[in-house]
Length: 422
Image (cartoon, rainbow, N blue to C red):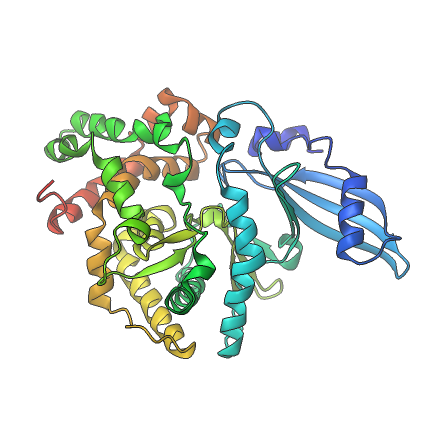
């Protein structure tokens, strides 16, 4: 499967493929997909498809299938994505979720329609990779074409360049723009996409979520230069998750006429993007978004605020963050015009007002997700330890990169008036 020297970089539950993922299983799927009942699998290689920290909400394998049909011999690289089968926290967390129903709907219904609308407007942007098989029974799973042989890769060892960042924000803007048109003209088409992160059945009782603010406050108390901010967060520690839920459910329960709503990606971070560069010149060519398991209808700010903490590096947050989101807005408005959107166009003032209005999302991200993502990027922690082990999580709040980032961000919160009226 995997060389012993390499196993440390992979998730433990991806080191050994389940028994059902075998040559016969893939032969059945490929013969249907290729419309070749005579298809025979000749060889099958299975390896882990992701590294530590890439994801938590599924188990993924990379397969290389060599097969023959009446037309000759072929090789097809595939990604198999399925639910965790090993007993433990991951399986318990995801067991009753809508993750695979959501992602299947995105790949098989929504994204093809979004691309069709873009094509009609002359836009050739590619939003997704084809899904060749999916099922919910007897197990939840999806099979995709593997992007790696096509020249795409995940960036893990360096910051994303401004050119790469603009590409992913452009893709997000086009997606959001089409979703605004569909919400305006055919709202029922997207009505099933209502399950975001905080709609997962066990998420609001999971210790990783519920202890984040307490750990954050403890960190503030122990660092003299940050202690003055502690009273603000103590005021909200018992209610901020409820306030956050109101923000996240705004489209469905508390919709406002002056806010913008989209079908969001839901998990817009670096490990859910793949980048393509020219093999000969190294020039950047394209980016592809992946992992649509918590795509849902919500305020436009959900993806944007998330990107500030979970996609951008600390320096980018401080120096390029506003410019990148303004670039996104330019792409959004241009796409809305090109596809014939009939609603009111978003404005820069309106967008930033909405971003600052949803401050409880900032509070959640800085206190709970930011230490996690910086710890992952440090390559000093394993994802399952960060999620499941409270002692390990506590260490992340005192990482130099995190403390430095928080020291820069909290004065910005104060300047924006985030602490008034808590």
